Length: 574
Image 1: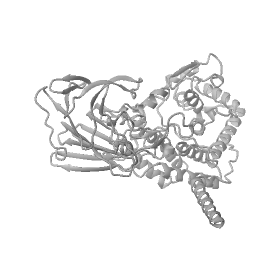
Image 2 (image 1 turned 45 degrees about the vertical axis):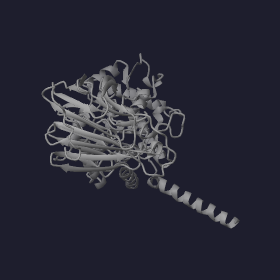
Image 3 (image 1 turned 180 degrees about the horizontal axis):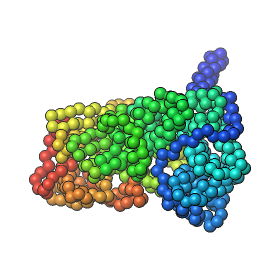
Image 4 (image 1 turned 60 degrees about the vertical axis):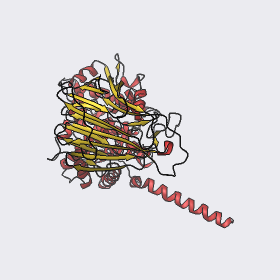
């Protein structure tokens, strides 16, 4: 018996060791990677993010505005001030704002930039728990210093030059340690690898260091960028931000006379069409899984690099689908929660959709607010903030509460069996999908069918609850369901006779919404993703008692006159 126990313990230990080796595989390339002092920079990458020269004047006058907080330094170093919030400190010490000084025509912009960077360098090393020492902030600081090194070093005194190069070396060592010792969060590792690789190229590190940094970067790139071009977190904003770093990296290889790795080229070629898939007619990206207000300048910069061709209709790994006919567009989330380590910003929006006509958005999700709206960010992740079905006001995915320190904010459970099928009928296209996010609690499967007619004038939906198969454990009898259709703030909604809701778009286009069996009502909602901040809006809500087998049909019908009935028509053949 004792021998059996010893064998069992040995087997468990071997399995644990193998798991540890697999987990650390991407970082073993850093063992023995010696970051030698950088004597000079041979090249600087381009910062392709849009810049605002007026910000440079604000900084010169001592005003530092980040993440909704404005601080007047009043002649003191901003790095010694009490930060109004951690996000402000991260933005300050990430130095992305150097691009505004670089774009300024003020003669003193370079001197101002050098003075501020010099003040920060003198503060190092940073204290424990300082947001400035977080791996993602360290990586962003490295990328900013490299990109704007011409501004900082042009006309600099030898003492500043030496101090700046020493700071780059220290930063590179911090990145190496964060990656090799597992200090970097999973969602930050690719950014750290990009920054370390750029340093090795710009500082002309030895061939072995460059090779190892490249290997580390490619492994993390393969891990985080999915075959369809989306990021493993399923957040379109993260895909967008990484493209703004990967495109300069590609140019950096070329400028050094080196062929960019095929995996880097392939990733960029997949990521740009992925963003096109999620783009509405007016240019913004759909509000899924942490997407905030779209910055038009960033998208314009990205799409300058795209190959000819229209957007794809499916992103099977990321879990999104696109339906379009004439000027009508429907974007649908048909994916499950991302891996737990990457789920800190993911939303519980299974089978949520957005609907637009031309440049006017009609049905939206609430979106994710700016980082300084902490409470609102949590609310925006809930199923109720999405245009989908919810049961008993419970989310389709379980988000770990704040009391759970190690997994706080992560999605620890959610839909696992998600099925989706696209087909074409004579009069339009149909998308059918289902998820089991409510199977364990209520024994119900949510099925959703969306049909868009060929002329784009009618969107027909059917939401159905079916009984889940056995094996989900103890179940609770649900009390109520709610179908929510959050409307864009530009849409005016009013109750109309015949249990309809009349929607008027800013252009004057009129849509009629109606639902079967239950009366649609208009309730308050909030749109988090407006550039100017959260805005009040409304939502259409259809609610009632749920039961297995219930079918809920609804229609958005474009009309030139407020009259007549909106024919339902079978969803299978719109």
